[in-house]
Image 1 (cartoon, rainbow, N blue to C red):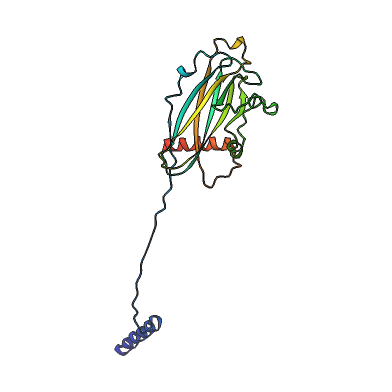
Image 2: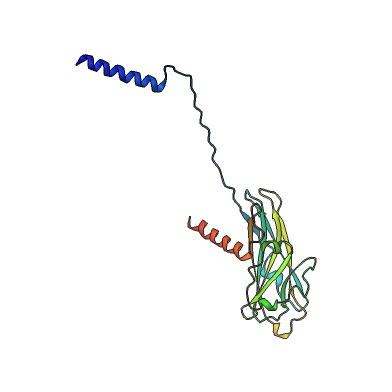
Length: 223
């Protein structure tokens, strides 16, 4: 019995030698790793020059300046657009009486006319590429002709830059405003949107950008 055990042990050693070889080698193992991080996009807006007092007591043909300053304090470059909503207390005509103008006066009477094909509808399917081609784009007149929307192209803000973008605009009351605009009001609402500059398809719609921004804002609040 003892001889059988010795023979079995010898057999096991022989198999082990065959599997591992009869030699020992110097070896070394090194591990490296990297942790990826996502950038953030963060805009700050100074609205100290965007107040009721700056746009009071207007008459047809008047223009009153409104301005705000946008800073990108995040780590990603951003394309910045502002959607400006004008809510008139009285209905407006096809050539809107209340409108937004830049300091160069680039918005013409034709630019502020309602497109007959989109009359009464929001035109949020306009592409980012088209918005980039315009300083100010009139996009819709809705809610019984009381709500006009414009999109202002604020350009690109570099990340972590000391530079801020000051946006100078004028609220206009057109000469086509008649007596029904006496004692009327126009609420001016500006919502500033930033979107990353890299890897963005220029054909995406303005509606998609806004929906994505709101979804992200809700997600941030709930986290």
